Amino acid sequence: MKIAISGILGRMGKLIQECILENDKNEIAFGIDKNAKEPIDNILLSYTWNGVNKDADVIIDFSSHDATKDLINFALRNKTPIVIGTTGQTTEDLMLIHNASKKIPIILCPNTSLGANYLIDLAKSGSDYFSKLNYEIDILETHHSNKKDAPSGTALAILNSILSVAPSLRPVFNQEKTKEKNEISVCSRRIGGIIGKHEVSFASNGEIITIQHEVLDRKIFAHGAIECAKFIIKQPPGLYKPSDIFNENKQKSVKNLTHYQ
Picture (tube, one colour):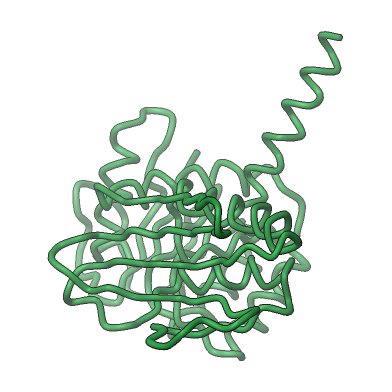
């Protein structure tokens, strides 16, 4: 698989480079970065999408939402699938992505950790069940002291997945008062060097069920992005999310079970 990396000189871009070099089945097609000046390790680099005429099977984007228009235009011209790990898109950016997905496959994943996305999937299915039993539902996210935004984008993704099956819940952020019926609390902690930790709890007077995911190594985001790339190159045009990878695997498992019956 030939992978183009958008934002190749950034922190995530460098980690993706490392992961690609660890697997001889993949190679770096070329790299795009606003700070690019000259090739590194024989990798073609450019500071702009204009004039790039090298093929890639897929683009992994960890640049800036400011580059969305040029990224989309290149991908449309070349019919190249995209993994978008960049965050902070404007409404206009999201419309560009949505319209482009009618012609090419795009997976939009603000968190490329497969484990974090599995937690989102579990939170949704758990909430669909426990909300009907009137269990309280809470989200707790913990990150390093220097993280500026709160709650995290992943915590908001968890919240949105829960609200999609339990729309009567009312979010309360960093709750400091007695909890009222139908409230879902979303709490944020900033401490030490924790990369990222998310917990979802379902509680009644008699029991508490907690599911948790914690990142121990940032490289897991790079590995996840490559897994997303492997998935998206096999898909028809459309806008996908990481949970679609799990759904595809579930469908394969069901087919295999049917085969052996």
